[in-house]
Length: 351
Image (cartoon, rainbow, N blue to C red):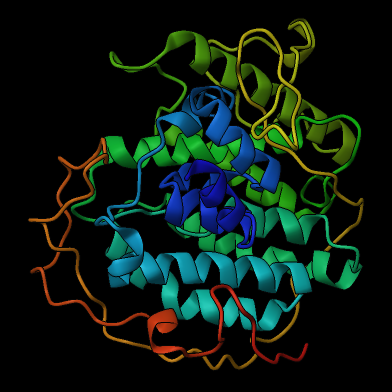
């Protein structure tokens, strides 16, 4: 039975298998899942989880009911994850921006998360072969800035854990020395990194809470400090471009740490089991430009999660979601709109 299931999962995108079938949305939210990762999950599920790093392992789950594909909120989250990543792969920036503008707030409310855009969507644009696409990737940055913003009624501790997961993914992406990421060399990218740095300070994310892991927090801050020092050097920026983090020594005084990996197919593991996210990027200078193109995704009412049917394995299920438990509204994939398969992309033109 198990070999048959593995064969079936091999016929669908690995990110769909990992999230909607195997139920681990963290791997697809923060990493680029490959078929080898799905195969490894069957052999060593705990090894896969332990390889992704503390901040991804304990990132909040989307509040979904099981089975995911029988409820509209799970289908819609899966659809947009696949749709946005495919648009990024193809370089359809205008359609991608239009879709996120129309549906980000909906998904945030629907699954009780502030970060709903997969990190790989941004990484695909930063490493795209077309410099035009790289330049326009800066138009996605305000959506991630919005995810950092405080939302009334949203649990602060849960939000902090989401922010730390994003910072972990971004840090590991930028800490590679075998490539220069577009976000490092572009003006808008440098401003975004300073924004994230200021969030670490304003949200006091440099402090380890009583329930946290001090070693992992210090390791994350050490890597982030190296990121900022590298950006200062490469961008010829003034020394005070980044405000100092309280209690942190300069990066040049710290030993260079070993980098590890997130998913097996993209990273190499070392002894402590910590994971580092990254992908090969191109070096370019970019500015914000371009108009938002039309996007034909049909809007549907915003269904709310029924609080009486929380996801069984959601460790954050004690945080309530807003809404009155309305009846399910069929998602886009359920109604067959836009595409005849999950994650399909319709016709699109660059503007």
